[in-house]
Amino acid sequence: MSTLGNGIALEGVKALIGFAVDRLKRTASGTSHSEEALRRKIEQAVFDTLQWSAAVQVFGMAAPRDIETDTVPLRFGSPTRLPSTPRTIDETELLSETGPLVILGAPGAGKTTTVKRLARLTVFGPSRGQADALLPWVLRFREFKAKETILTRIADVLGIPWTVQAGGAPHRRCYRYKSGEALLVDVLTPILDATRCCLFLDGLDEFPTSSLDDVLDEIEELSRKLCHGRIVLTTRAGHFSYNLEGFGIFQIHPIAPLQVDEIVRRWSAYPGDFKSAIREVPYRDLIDRPLFLIQLILIHNQDRTLPDQPSRVYKSMTRLLLQEWDRQNRTTRETRYAHFEPERKADFLAAMAYALTFLPTRKTFDTSDLEGVYGKIHRQFGLPAGEAKQVVEELETHTGIIQASGASSFEFAHLSLQEYLAADHLVRSPYPENLPKYLSDYPAVLSIAVALSSDPSQWLSSLVLPSWNRARLGRDGLAVFNERLRLERPYFRETPFLGTAVWLLDESLGRDIDWLVSDPVVEEAMAHALTYYAVDPIEARSGRVRLTSFATPSSTLNLALPESIGVSGSRVAVIAKKHNVPLAYYGPDGRRFTRAGEASPLKWLFNLGGP
Image (cartoon, rainbow, N blue to C red):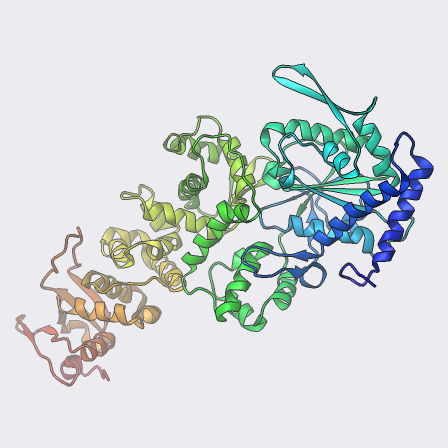
């Protein structure tokens, strides 16, 4: 016996359709279609929906996965941008809501997967019988042809002929769709009602903007006339700023830790390793969105590890949201603004993040914040003045990187992506005006900028060598900078400026930079830097020594080595011996001399006990 993926007999579904068509015959009038022809058309539409909803395949997957065994139910609540009483419900409770529904979600939040799960619940739910079963029918807006409407698409599937009459004013044409002498909506509504159709309209944000008002009017009219059928509409949260009369509006919640654990268990080849690895990376906040979590699991499945450089993940996820996700889904999104393509959107988001991120203790920005930033940057992106809110709403719809968090407030969806975008702008700016503010208020972004730079050694040197930068950072700021740099794992090249910068970090942080010194390139740079310094014995007995410069390496960089640095004597001893550095010293008479040999010169002079 054939099944539809969960053990429910195909004949059982046919029986439900037969029951629905019988009900249509008893209650509906005005249709000239034979019972058998209508049964076949409805049966095909329902079977197509159930077949489509049986599997899920996200970006980067080689093969589809079973919707029931490999996905988890999500939770829903009140939209963030609408004032309402907070509540949280599951998908079964969502279907139990009376009236039509709108489901909002960010890109990758699980809207289409939720539609698939709900479509199967209407038939296969635990309490569904012939009397209360709904017949699911999914229409995906991305598949609509030019000038096609919801009503004409349903009529074409059912084989019902229709005509169109144009009217209205030139600036807003009005179209009346008829079947014979009756309005097409009045012909279709009894069929949808009698068959208890649950019409899922997936992806309103993928419908052409120029025809959006017409399709919204159509949805409202169809909803008003349905008595027993119902409509479930999905769209991206940033796209929905309309008042659909009578519709309940719910937004998909970020996935909770228990849901994350369940997805990892079902998708990961090494669930324990993955959970351990994700706890150690700075982009762990991304896993509250199913698309990102699955992407990271698929990466981990290949090599049993996550990327050692988080900047690669930030860049990949940003590109996924800006381009790849729509490209896979064969969706082209219209923009209101000329030349505001994905690459320009990425640059604009980076400029916004750069201007907003250093604001301390704030993750949410109100309208005045956004308007202030927009007023400074809109001209360089060719955007009109005074349209900050409209531009941000388009970015929310198209990317989901920035989103509404209240009626008049916005936020970046993930802090890690916000920091990455700010660093991306920073590293591409030759004279970043907000650098002093980042030094004092948000040094973590500077660590990301070092990793993103085409020359991390030069970037680190330029940040650490100037004394005024170190003064703005302070010891606490240097500690934050160092810890985030440890997570970002930049790849360095050996230069004496890099080595000197690391010696300066040693002066403030001591053993906390051991991770950095363990990089062979960094250690070589520190050894190279020692050739420009002499060791002052004054502080040797405390285990610290003072390096005093007596030469400056030639460079095109506008950088100068600090005159003196107080560092760990044992670290100097170890690196000098390992790299056979002929250390220079100041003797009691103040004269500089050099001593090199098999034993550590520092051990000979100060008895510091180097290896």
